[in-house]
Image (cartoon, rainbow, N blue to C red; front, side, top):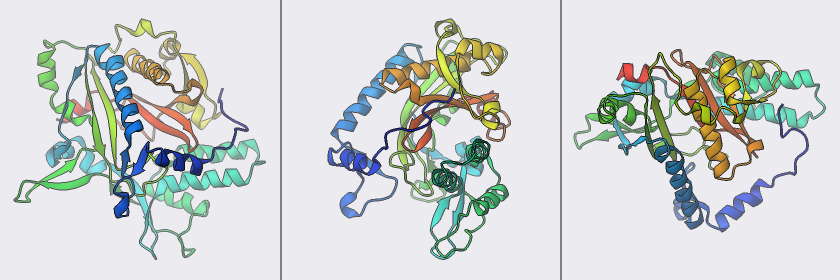
Length: 364
């Protein structure tokens, strides 16, 4: 069942933010020149902490699984990201204050409006409350028209009291040019996966032409967030670890699945999200057997991720896996689960686990 409901000690976010800056864990980048939203520098304590986490990530995943690690470039030619679909579809829906010109991310505005409503109405009937939470969980899956309608229903208005502009897509990639001529378009990579996909043939040769095998990369990604906020949760430059495990599409079993089959995970399936709103604690072996999790390989890496999070000191009671709703998943995906962390900002996605079928290899 869902945990962490009910009364909890109030978290003083302002005091916490002041502390991490004062102790120089994290500081605003270019602070003496006014700073830039969404950019932060890691101080000595956080740099050491990050190094320790990356070292453990390599030992836990790359070395333990004999993965093929790469380090690919951050600067990516347009043709690569056009082929992958990022140029056309790597977007968030945005609304604009028509008076000030300020822009906001539409789905996050809806989520915040629902949070405010629930906070102001603690005695709201359970059924009504669950209805609002279902709408909140689907915030990033709505069409622009659906989102516009809900923003009006929840009273989201601009500074002048008028509705925001209709929502429209905004591409999150940083665009640049490669070379002095200015004719070759490039982007700072928004994710670390494409470098692995375009090198698949060489990686397969290096692995003697055999599958399954896994490739890994850890490094910087860049996203031009619409309205960076929430501390380090929505920033424009951040470190991410990526693993692509390649299997025979007709055999998605994993040779080491038996080592994690009894590991219990807190799962929030799509039916529960649209129904009871409750999670369930279940062994990953049982989840795969019942079909809740699509296959052994996906389940194996979900369990391994849970074990890594516990190793670095995360509270297991603040971790859950949320399954993507049908409206969130790409047409080619077989199953997707996000590991989420319960923070003072609510449940926040931290790790994505997706069976993407052969889409990426096919398009490249």
